Length: 161
Image (cartoon, rainbow, N blue to C red):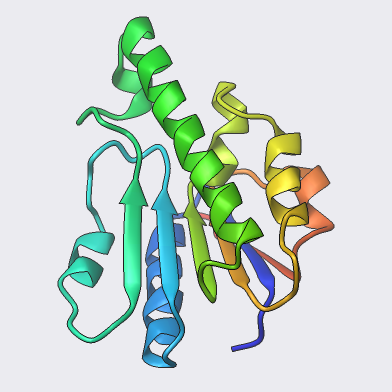
């Protein structure tokens, strides 16, 4: 698997599932994998199965503390979760800057600018922090801002018809 930056976006289902499959593939190739999930609350979803696999180097991180989805929270709860999510983004920055893994998934990070938790520039800064091209990065979300497309080696749009 060539080290690159991939973006999976669109209104179709399967972006996180696709990222999960790529993560398993990378782990089976003996690469270290870190998955950071955003905007999923404490829902395990597709990643629950990964956490139970033996013999693969996949670490999953979620920084949200509440069970509900972000849009279902009260304004006070949204502010608290926004701080937690920004901590997750800072963790992603550290992972990228220190080359802490071979394969990094930033699941639903593309949705964060839409709800005002971070800016598109923050995601650009994350990608600029990549010291060398040894880390493969996968980002998912509904919308891929034009400003991020220039960093991607591949942008795949999944749609529902």
